[in-house]
Amino acid sequence: MQKGELVANGKAKSIYKTDDPKKLIMHFRNDTSAFDGEKIEQLDRKGMVNNKFNAFIMQRLEEGGVPTHYESTLSDDEAIVKNLDMLPIECVVRNISTGSLCKRLGVAEGLDLDPPLFEFFLKNDALHDPMINDFHIISFKWGTQKEIETMKELTFKVNGILKKLFLDAGILLVDYKLEFGRYDGKLVLGDEFSPDGCRLWDVKTREKLDKDRFRQGLGGVVEAYEAVAQRLGIAI
Ligand code: 5GP
Image 1: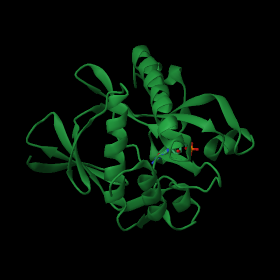
Image 2: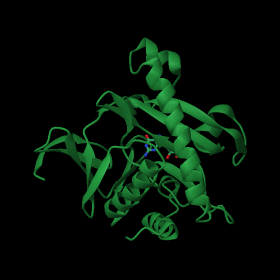
Image 3: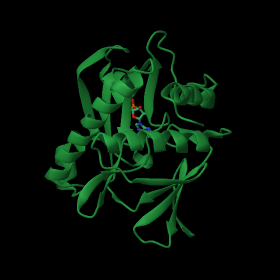
């Protein structure tokens, strides 16, 4: 597959055209960012680890009935994906309270959320990804009512699949963010699923094994990602 021009350069990934207009190449870079791009560092091996992590998770999700954009792995840090028309929306599910939820509502950290919470955010760094609800999505035509329902249904379906997958490896899936796009008239999971966009805690020690290690300057970021990958049986 021929790698074409750069079409998008995100904070941690770059997207390239291919000779097939329905396919793109997603390059996972070593760049690691937090606080809407205010803190950026290069972390050795992260692009490769996240590419392999994401490929593994996307395949488990497809098997579980969640349509994803993942097609195949092209190289250590590149994947071939479907060319989606992305919605400017982030879908977050929370199983345990932490992060922005605690800051926003003043609730305690580490509470089991039963049922899990679902939140929509607008993907906009300049505005710090503000929280939105169904009405904003409809009024501003960022998505349809049917797409809202599908995003909720698929994001919870992902929770069912991944909570068990991680728990079997001794890891709690605390929360995560997903992004969806349109492809051939249906909504498909895009972007990535890696420790950059979710929170993972060791079930016994509650040690953080995700990007909070970077956000909070705890060190051992990629080492933690690799440890999770190893526990899931992902060959790095
Ligand atoms: P919070 O709203 O607590 O900051 O984040 C909730 C979950 O969504 C966390 O797992 C966090 O990693 C993920 N998340 C929310 N916004 C973003 C984002 O803009 N980029 C990434 N990589 N993850 C995000």
